[in-house]
Image (cartoon, rainbow, N blue to C red):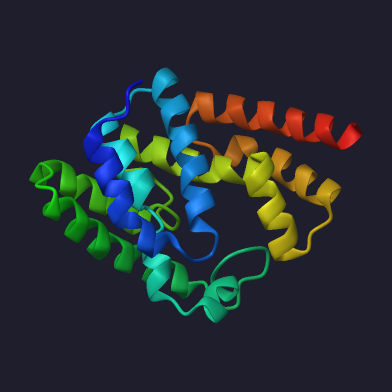
Length: 192
């Protein structure tokens, strides 16, 4: 799938907001998974790609010393997750409107960003893909390394946790398959 120039423009505008919480790395990984999911699942590329590029821009509005209180194994201030979603939707709207993105698509992208972590039920097929691409980053080699360091979780324990939540957590068949593949790869790497 060829990457449209508009996506590159959106990403360049998002970069300053992603320079926190290792979100530049996270977004690049999630972007790769979104592209892979789009090959197997029905979704609107013009919604999915901007949404995945912009989904975590709102973390820039949260002081870094509070990030780990909002998410992870034992969040003490999970309301900040909603704050990053709301702030992210505002930032996404500003970026998309700057590039004259179609208003009906801007509306859905912003709705996706505004609930990508906390909304349990997806609003569209595109939202399902964004949610799964975001979660899949935890299963990637780099994403897992970040989480293991960030949360000080033993590797084996984290693998067991991630494997155990696949069926409940992922919304697409392809997302579940990719997660299982990644778990297999992480175990294989560990065995070497």
